[in-house]
Length: 442
Picture (cartoon, rainbow, N blue to C red):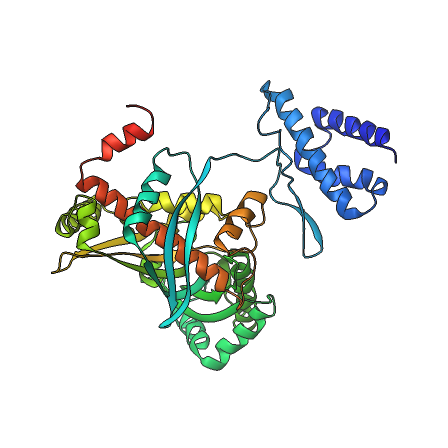
């Protein structure tokens, strides 16, 4: 098929799209099926089909709305990829990428620990994507003052908690007893782990309420390698439920996700039991450094308590005992190809500040559910891949899971720098002035 014939085919498809004979989401497969014979390989054909599909969707939106899409359409960022031998698109109905200003903060020194063992030490320039004018300056100044941030992974495991209805409480008791038996749990574990190369079913905690004692929520905790792991845990949880259904045919799996996971929500269970990576950070800021910043440890301690602890408590927060942890989480997630909806629970954070007798400040954050990955999802998009390479965590780590853990620790340390700076800014009574200056208002 000649190039001119391809153009005629695309013209045909364009007209069919406008008439409603082809749906916008069908474009890639429609173009691919009609033009693949003209390319040297199916890989090339799929990529070009996706590129053409984006252009046709952009044209379709202009046709429907009258808006000329000069910026989103002007891109060589393709939705077409090949994963596990299958041709897929990154998202549905893609017509171009969204563009967010991107900068970096640092250098930020981070040391990572797990099980009393040092995992890594490094100095990082942290990629951040944000529309907030003062944010990167805020984090950058925090990096200068916090020094080496020690990060401690206290728990690791992504969770999924189905909602399962049993005929009555007594039947539910039997199901719970079966799941808690080591040999029976092993049956679920073996079947679930057949679905993945790296996923490991670590444990299960069964939760239920007094109002419906026949409905149970087994909260499966799973090691997901270097992936954030939502697809892994969902598939593994389904397989575990299949084993349960074989053993207890009268159960009804009402929902594979029963909201006790808890995905994309700030919840008490995530705060108390963790999800993804649970990380605590510590930094000691000397009296001399504090004085250089024209503040003192007792002032920071007092502001942290009345702002982040008492103020948040009076507001009725679940996990927001912090100044602006979500700012740092959002900026690192956007720059590094993470699931943006998981900013919600990943920004669960309690900030600590304690003045020591010698005038130093002991400072840190408790982040019980940092949900990140270095493979899968948006991590292989061009800008995200570059950002992850800057941090030295792109792709699978050696051992498996090490890159994800390092990224989680860097994110936690970045939050720590951001949290220190906001308290320092409050202590110096510069919050309004700084925002006005950095947004060009003064």
